[in-house]
Length: 197
Image (cartoon, rainbow, N blue to C red; front, side, top):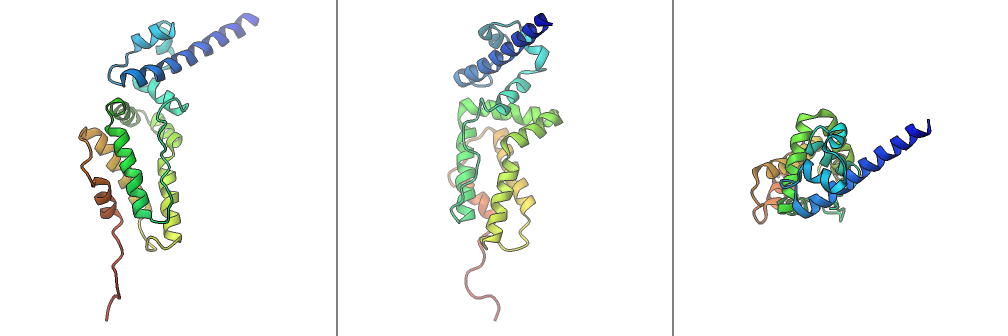
């Protein structure tokens, strides 16, 4: 019994060592130059030990993300009382993060593994909470009169997340003012002045 407990403790220590090493090497090398062999060597475990818990490099990196070891950037949209400026600020920050060479490979891999693995996709959404955060912010904007009643909030959230994913997959830096133009297309300013005669 005691032997089994010691074995489990060693396994958990190995798992944590692998996750910590993955996060450190990712920060140093980026996703594209990260290898299972390199992680195993640095963590002091056999390659088979890693594959016992994770099927691929993407799944391993995804678990690092779920445990808060990656993506220190703040994904919460600000709330200054101006929904369009807040979403522009949030989207600008997201573009800057994903455009950084050390981050773009990771984000692309997470998109791929989320598309291939339904469980990872659900975990990723729950971990980051972007859909919920955006929906909450848009709900608050509607209640405050920043957006007209009946604004299709779910579609706006899906479009914002879709824009971010397409941007990552295109591998092209965001053009100046892109975030503002995109938000303007999704949430146009209400007409100014009296309506009708």
